[in-house]
Length: 305
Image (cartoon, rainbow, N blue to C red; front, side, top):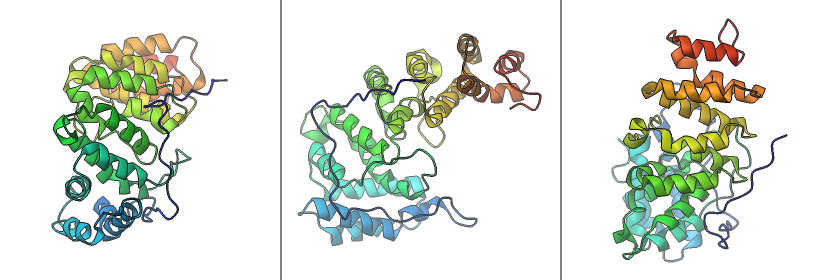
């Protein structure tokens, strides 16, 4: 049986913020219905809820002014642009110093998720929060001249436990690769599967919908220790991300992935065999002999399971 990972807190001695009673996120469907779009998840109800949550934890917050600015120009924007638009409005209405603004945002969070499946779409409510970190969390100029890296890592640690910080992690990997990978490596031992998944998902070289990481597209090796640490994770939610990360690498460096899978398949558990099959599914569909052979070693059936 796999040992339960030990938590590696982002800031030792600094407890996660407790959510006051009454904080909430808007209800949302599990999936988007035909004819609808994701942008409805960040419409007027989400703006109203965001304003109410922030006013609950930060008395100076002007909810009416925030709502007015947030709704101005919102309608034509898609989901990602809405996230960035609302982040800019948050910047104008939260404390000027980044660390103080993050403190308000973290105190406004609802409790962490307790499951890794059937999460639904309501968690997209926190897209503006991760956009805020991505847009303002690297530059010391937004934080009174002080390096905001540790504050941003703590924010992303908390946000990924409620939504995902895979989008906001990208700028940090592109501007401070070694430093960010070191933090992600430490989090591979965290008790929360959402945090462990972030380590793999957030560092995927070609993550869909997200900014690519050119350095890891050129050379994926710096992130490989993260995948090694998570290949036998007790949660499928995490192992699937590892498989998808390998799938990204295979698009540019198939030999690297074949070599990894060649090593991992020796003495592999059924869970790891599934990971290998999933990682190699795209080159196998294109008839790449190395991928087909490795998938067979990992127990693939004639139907390609």
